[in-house]
Picture (cartoon, rainbow, N blue to C red):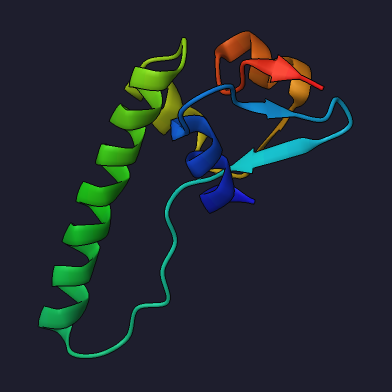
Length: 93
């Protein structure tokens, strides 16, 4: 779901999907363990990557980075029609 959704959104050419499909976006997640310094470093890195993703999604869609951050705090399931409306895809097949 979510990683593929980001890849689809950032794709080049005509981004398309079936009208019966659903895509899910969500906040970054990680299974972090280890020393406190390693955990802290990983959290900081994931925060940066997450912000980069919000900004990339904003560049390719009709929604800004704040919208993406707010809406990806939990699993966000979107239909083909919704994805077309916000600019994640270009065509429903």
